[in-house]
Image (cartoon, rainbow, N blue to C red; front, side, top):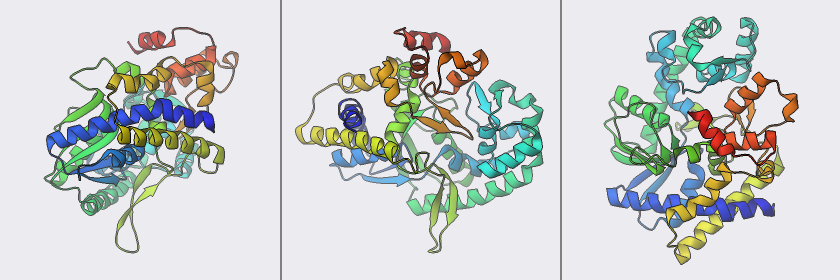
Length: 384
């Protein structure tokens, strides 16, 4: 596992240290005494922050996810069209992912798909969802279940935020990108009159929804967006590097002792000891770097600290893509970051869908074509 430790120490560690150094300075400057790190991306952020935190700022870990925060909002939606307003935009969305959005587990989704005559992996162009008859039937035939589950999660989330002490003034920390988590939390706080005051701190942030609270980006935000595409070509990779050894929070439940606990989805790499050892190796290497930097002090600029990892994501070699060929996400179906078969075995339509779904666009192209082409420039053209 030496190659993963080395990657963690030389590329991920400097990036992580730069972020928590910036975060600590921002929290002190703005006078925060409590900060919440959101699961799962906040796992390594919190560990690194605890190494650098000499300020007395209280750091808490909150089990939040897009799913656990938007589920309590769905009961207030008036119809099918309105029910889609919390769904994150992407070029294509699978029926499996749409069913997960509405709160159905894999077994329930499979049953609904069988009755509806479609496959969970079948995709819809996002902009055509409202006119898709099967998508509409999913909502209308299961509306009562969606609403009743949403109301229950609404109650549990209210109790969970109170249990966390998420009241008054505080900061929240997550990886960022589109600001959906902060938007969901805002909507929840407004509808419940919680009277909270918070702002978000992220690696990079470009909200797609109008927010009523402040956002701050380490490498990009509205004040400077130059790094946005440089990071987003590898956005799934940053998430995997930061995440904990547990599944995402799908919602909340009451425990026997009266506390509210998160209901966690299965960890995607559970049972695969080799992958878990690789993850532990790069995380251990990264934290070793952070600890050493805290002890000795580093005058390196943010660019010096972040560039090694950013360039890895932008301009990977074939060996780089092989290093993380096991990366995948599970949004109803398993979607890998890199090509899992030779290019000639893809149909054109299949290849475009796989590339669109990939969370590492440059890595996917590099692993598929295997030639030293300007993949980042190609990615930029595709994103226009």
